[in-house]
Image (cartoon, rainbow, N blue to C red; front, side, top):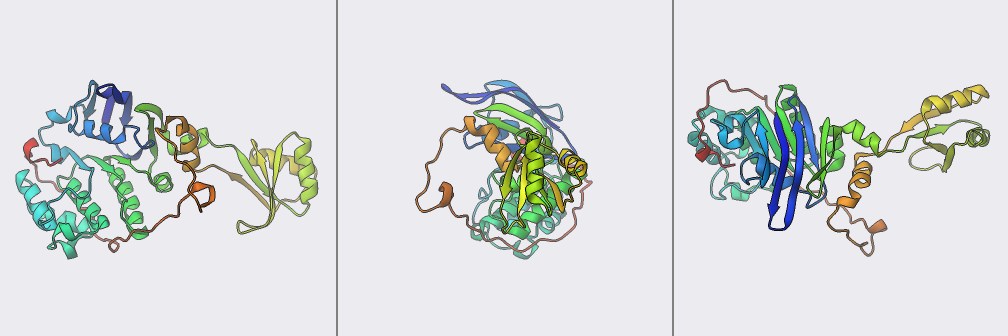
Length: 346
């Protein structure tokens, strides 16, 4: 468990984190969201003892990071993928980490298999793609078999198969009872990965709630409905004071009606009273992206102007390369680890 109480970080007159309190529970994946400059990275660094708070406290299983006797055994983190010495191989790097923290050498091959890097374990880390470097960072985080894991942008540089693997992997870690805290800008993926969300803006807490509840807070209740008598259906709904919008036929399907601030139960009952047959009746919910923009819009440090030649100012998205889908079990190591803070590269 991670517990922050009144966590504050100042850099001169700049307040990066402002009286932030939250709890990250074990047994679930908790997403950490906020606009750029919201204080996410600073918060993670304070959790890991890399930055000292100006005020407040943050504890891992009831202790500050500096009080942990075996940090690698208790906490694993991926904050930056390319921090490994470029001339070291993946196996050499992990062996050095294991030796400096008195972790059995056999654990190195276990984590290499878990993240799918066994085949490139002897290659220099400097030649790794960003996706491969991400996997090596995850292997390092898992080396001590910790109960608490922090990941900053873990899917960065991964292809769709790798992203799917990460999602399933995080769920598996949480199912084992571990605390999994994940920061990411890929909101569509966070909607599928995180069961709980902690959302901040300008260093302040905006919300801590389930992913579903967060989306519902900012989502208009909309119902999509379709039937053979569309004009009559439209009139019945309007007659009840409901806001109705026509949706023409297209890639999303046949022509339909969108009813705002309603429910499938209400629309279905209205149609049933007048004997209208319905071919489609479905609730339309907002996305995590829509909820995030609505609830954090006033917390953004800057707003970009529209880009010439792109619709609505939206740039085209690229697709990064990544290594192949990894396989392998997730073994847990039972040997005791006598780690020292000096050996913890976090």
